[in-house]
Image 1: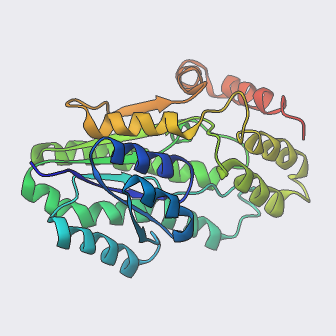
Image 2: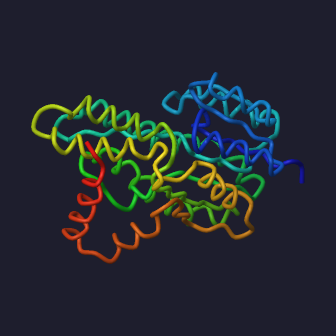
Length: 277
């Protein structure tokens, strides 16, 4: 078989950036896509091919995937990593923003998957790796839209795993906990902009501080650890269906399974109150 081909979305920073580097080091021909093309320039030194990609734009997605298939005839591994966190009270977040959150986190992921599947089916193999979050199985105050998208990614991925099995295509879900990227700070800023004043102000200050703390916190995980899990899902003969990864990920998900809802509500809030607002 010729050199395997991987496409990584959301590769301008963090998890996607590290994943592109690690897949290239493993011998993949890697295409890294994002809107902020200039942020991906350092990836070229690792042999990664950089492409402009907007997962909310049909023309952009079709052109990017089409160009790869035109050269290689296939995409062997798709890493759906593009996503962001839109926080704020459900009452105050505009519906247009909620729709955009779904466009990026769910519909963009689904469309990229649609685009690579015909070639995967034709070869009888492939990997779809969807970056979800522990937030796809638990929740936070003021995170309704974000968590709704990640719950959707989990359900979509589980159904996809079963329907693609007869075609030799494997599906894995990556579930990171807090990660040392710009994600948390950006999410916290958007939360304060939306709900930092008014009836949800006190909650917003606490949750924003907790989100921002992931950038460099001792309780958060470097994105290359998450990238290692993605590489395992891309290369293992029998990849896991789920990869809870990062500090606290397994413990939090275990508590979610064991505790009644109202008890878990209290646990989550008490954890968040530890961060100075």
